[in-house]
Image (tube, rainbow, N blue to C red; front, side, top):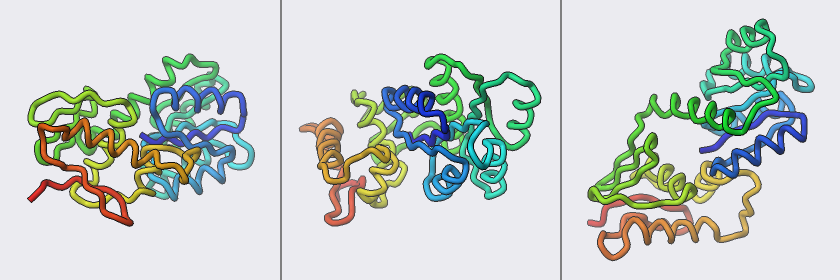
Length: 224
């Protein structure tokens, strides 16, 4: 899951980004409304955390422009005040929910999970390809009915491959959806996780289903 955090206050931004990354979310940070519009237009996010008070364009203006551009990514407004008028203005601009500062990590994560669930419900909570099934709500993966234990990052990687199956997912696309802008493109971390996932998904019991398309990326494909 990839989340855009829009926050100009460095202390709050670090707090929010760290909490999300520790819970296996890929996170990008924008420190202005203008930058947020640019990033949200270029990248498909699963959720946007948007501060109301920003330099330049306000969070309300950013939210309104995103909705006018038909970008329907779920938006959680972050506000330092609990004024009803401000909440109403944000919701009327197209925000899906709001959270008043200061807030606890547990509440932040719960709100994000709720927003992500709403987005997942539009495409269905369960992804299937061949004999693999991934349940987004239960965070469970099975192959031929047998449960497979995956780490959070392995789960996110398989989820993205399933969402593209049987088409090829390029290495760049995988990085954009599973990791974040802090990812070092010179490392072989993607290959390491692909190999780990292959071992868990196929092992000795099942046929190979995660294939490398040399020079392009990876795909799920049933052996002929």
